[in-house]
Amino acid sequence: MQQTIIDRIDQVAENVVSLVLRGARGPLAPWEPGAHIDLALPNWLTRQYSLCGDPADRDVYRVAIRYERLSRGGSEYVHRFLRQGRTLDVSLPRNHFPLLPAPEYLFLAGGIGITPILPMLRAAVEAEIPASLVYLGRSAETMPFVGELRALAGERVRTVATEQQDRPDLAALGSALAPGALVYCCGPSPLVASAEAAFPAGRFHSERFQPEDKSFAPNTPFEVECARSGRTYQVPSDESLLDTLVHAGRPVASGCREGVCGSCELTVLAGEPEHRDDIGAPAGRMYACVSRALTPRLVVDL
Image 1 (cartoon, rainbow, N blue to C red):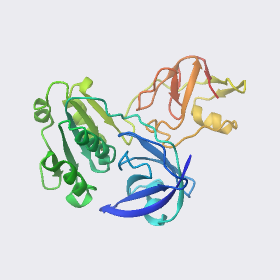
Image 2: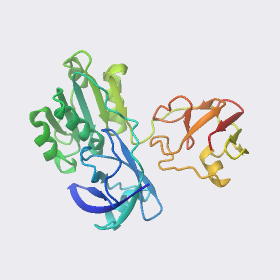
Image 3: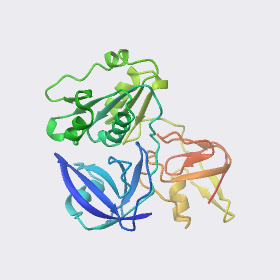
Image 4: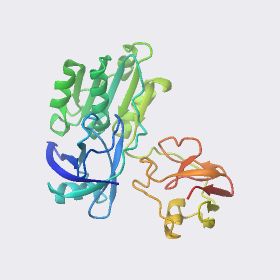
């Protein structure tokens, strides 16, 4: 973990604040567009937020948090109780949404989904790669960073206030793209689903804040061996691997518990995991909060 101090809290849109977090012990760990951090809140909750500042500035991280009416305690605490000068622990950055090289980019963002997209647009502009952004929000007042985006990319930024304007024709946007162009999308599930249907899979990259609805076979019990300790535990059908390990005194970092943040990643040494995450676990890895086993036994590096 890295220790930071809240340098500034800014109201950047209706029900959205940004936190500027300064490293308490010098420069913070480097990051690239698309990365996020775990923020350890003083109310014992850990939440994940995309970094939306400038990767070249190692002195501070910036995140933005929208107040959710049905908050599980994270956004409500940030908006109601956090104050400038407070010390907060944050994780090293993780990136499951990297910006890949391309001759052109189309960025699509909905609401707070602008947070990982903003540094991507900045990177493209600085590299002089053609890039455009379509940014949707309920109204202009609910859309953070519009002024910053327009200062960065001018007319290449198109904002759509959906209460007054029609939603963009995604197929038409796709037909205007150059060969090899990549599309990056982040926002509410309906936007991501529509974009996913409109663009070729090989050229489309997205990040979701909530897991996609999926169906799996009924849970079955399995056994997990922790290779470093030599201990073996039974994972019942009504409990996750993460909870079994935590209850057994083998703590694993966790955040979203929905398979979207990656904080509970484990290395699998033997057996075949059943991947239920929304990230796309790399070979030999699994996310303990949602994923289970296709074999009767797993061996993990723990």
